[in-house]
Length: 80
Image: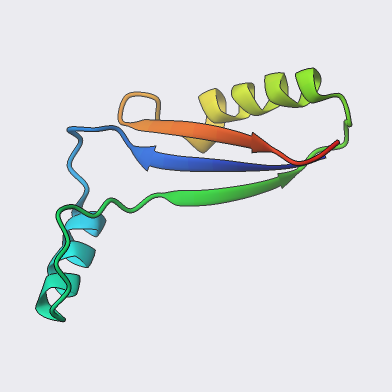
């Protein structure tokens, strides 16, 4: 089963990459209010069981893929 994990800085957490992108976009003439930069992680899981896949992905996020103090994440499971 294919899954996508989107990791972003939590609201209120300093995002230097987002600030740099925001400044560059404004310099180019784009009217942006705020820009945040995150990362996307694609994972191919060996299981086709959605509940098992979600549980594994939650553990992956908590143990390696995110820093839970400063980042949030969303998980999107592919079609079974």
